[in-house]
View 1 (cartoon, rainbow, N blue to C red):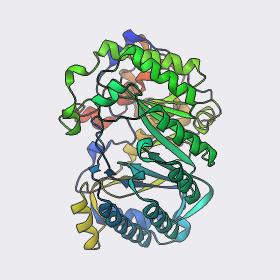
View 2 (view 1 turned 45 degrees about the vertical axis):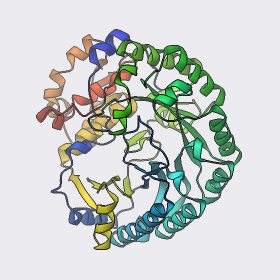
View 3 (view 1 turned 90 degrees about the vertical axis):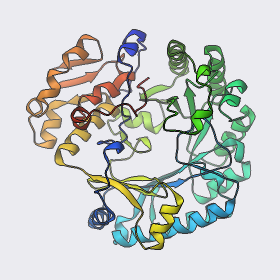
View 4 (view 1 turned 135 degrees about the vertical axis):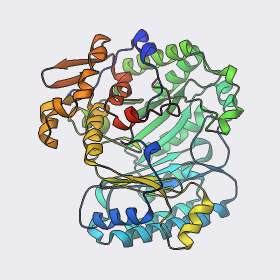
Length: 462
C-alpha cells in the first residue's frame, strides 16, 4: 500500500466544507451516555484480565501556567504546584484500582504511554519521577514501547528534557501553532523560535526517537505571508512529524475563545489559501500526507505503517500500533476497553470525591453493538488507508458488503461524480483530491449521525 498523496481542490473543498466528527472513535464521544456506569467499566476491565490485547495508557495532566485563547482542552490554569501534587496522589489511586479490577499482570503490559493535557510539563521533576514510578509499579512495558509527552517550550528547560529521557520518554510533541508575534499575542501565547529550537535540539541529543510539531491554521491575525514564514522556520527545524490543525472557533463551548476578537479570524477564503500553501510547502519539503491533519517524513513510523497497511487511529490520533485497549487516567480522560468506551468526570472535585469513595470516576460511556463494531472498522479503514476492500471486509465480518451497506451504496454516486471517491469492482477508494475530505466520506457510514443528526458541535472538515 503506497503512502497517501494529496491534491488541493479548492472548489471541492468549498462544496463539502461542513461540520463533521474527527472519528477518533466510533461511535463518537457525543453518543456516550450516563447509563454506562462504573459497574459496566469494571466488567470490561475484568474481561480484559482474561485477554492479552495490545494495551496503551493515556494520562491527562490538566494544569497550565497560562491560558492560550485558542485552546478548548479540559484544563486548569494555576501556578499552585500543591494542586498537581494532590492530583498525582489521586492518579496513583485510580491506577491501583484499575489494575486490581484487571487482575492478571500479563494483561497490564504497555505498548504505548502518552501524557497529554493541559501541560504535562507543568509537573516538577520530582512529581514527574513520582508519577512514572507509580506507572511502572502498576504496569510493565514492552521493550519497544512508545512513551510520549506533550510539552510547552516556554516552560521546558534542557534539564527537563534530559530528565524526561532518563524516565524513559522517547517521543515528544511540541506546541508551536504560529511563530508570528502578532498572532501569538492575539492568542496569548508568546513563544520564540529559539525556545522551540532549544527544546527540540535537547530532545534529539537525549535520544528521543520522534519529534512532532503542532501548528494551527485559521488563528486570529494570521496571514498567508505570515504563516508561510512560520512554515519555513518549521522546515528549518525539520521535525519528524507535523500536525496541521484547523482552528475550530467555538466560543459557545470554550470560554477562553471568547477572548478572541472574531473580526481578527481570517476569512474562509484566506484560510483556504493558507491551507493550500501549507500543503504545497510540506509536500515540497518531502513530507507525506498521513491523513486528516498529519504529515510525516517518509522514513517515519507513521508513513511506514500506512504503506504496510498497519496504521490505526484512536483518541490520541494516528498510531502505528495494532488496535487494542486504551486506559485513560485523570479528569475527562476517554478510554477504550474491549467493546466499550468510558469517559471520566471532568472536574477535580468530582474526580477526588469518586476516588475517596473507592469508586472509579466514570461519567459516561458506551457499549458497542456488533453493528457499531462493523461500522467502526469501515470508518477506520477509510480514515487510515483511504480505501475499503469490500470483499475482504465482508469476509472478515461475515457479511455481504453490498447488502449490509445497501443504504450507503445508494449515496455514493454523487461523491463519485464530484471526484471524492472511485468505485472499482469490490473496492471503494478515496481519491487524491478527496483525501482532505475523508471525514465527509466516513460520515456516510455513521449510522448514529444519520439517525439523529447532531453535527453543530463538530469542527469544520477544513
